[in-house]
Image (cartoon, rainbow, N blue to C red; front, top):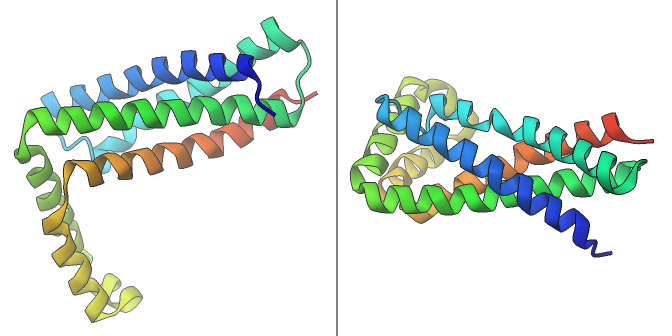
Length: 169
């Protein structure tokens, strides 16, 4: 069922969380790190904080007692709007900053693939490894934003489950 209150809380806290995540992306970029590589994991830190705060706000001011289902829906709503807004901001940033952001990310990922070549070939096989290596060259800002969206929705979903269990009746 559609609950407008859950959507409002999700939008409010999701957009605020995405702004915090995007600020971390910008900070990493201007410090000289690749915000989409290993250091980019730091940009996921605001997600659990905002999910817990949103469910707590929903519980205190709208329901009083919430069950697992409502807590999960609030958390997933925050995760969805965080992922969506951050992906849009990342796309705009990569598009405006130019192709050097994507090329830096591709170079770092190719270096990582080359460093772990033996393990990758054992897991995937030689043919799949070469296909993955060649596919790196065709990375676009849209693909980078879509990847960012999927990662954030996954992380948000995990923390939504944890928060829903924590805040249930």
